Length: 404
Image (cartoon, rainbow, N blue to C red):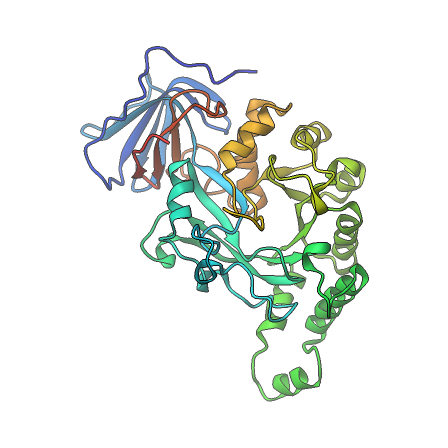
């Protein structure tokens, strides 16, 4: 297995001329493509009109005359965060910048992340400077069904400029985080309410009022959201950490023949056979998440165990109830690599594997011709805590030149 060894001939300095170039070349002592070309020693990635047009050894890959060239010892695809609340969860941790959860009702699948995302929040800039170029973000834990997610690039003056896909998944939650003194008050009630919502969507109405609305021609946004799940268009992202809740998620998927992605999955190492047989994908809890409450069985080695068992997973920044309420996938992957996960697999968990789970692998996650020109540059091994990110490119635009 290759390591992220420094290539002595390459300095960390970034050679730059234009702040918002859409055409740029990135040369690295090591280029970890995460695609068929593997790791290229002394490699080049050429980006034109925001898309990758060439990837290969510097000796045989032509760089168009006059194109800006950035250099770094290690070059990787832009990092992909498989599940986040960044942009809805603000860095100030004040009521006016906490839009990841509306607790006025337990089931709200029609809440759209696009209506709450703030592209100017400092957390968006922070994760961008640390190499994250694509976020799967949206509503978080705290309610049985908290709302929708979306995929954005970590740039843009408006949410429309950042947006890649709206309504990517619908976020649901099982276990203690989504219990309420009134309803649902138990795990059995959680499952009953989820089943009832899906059954109502199958029949087109959840109660007499909804039936009247349908007969009068008025739209029911809640039913429409669940109907997209039933049609197989939208996965149900179920945050479930305890084994009993993960089993309930698998049961729901089988009962309704729907696509479920299990989020959190702290007890995943306790049910490897069931997960592998179900063919479900996981967005695993952050490696360094505190092991308490619902995550009391979480382990630093879970990512390595899942990789060995052949269970598809990606790492995430996630959501936590304490400041700053989100993490950085680069560091979470690094810690997983320090606890048994091979470097190639660790990088995959925040690039191509993450892209595959959120349905974006045709655009991001690897450095291949035709894909978005998203690149992260490092001054050495990305998973060494002291290694800074030296530059970030999104679709050919140099969005960060800071050393972070």
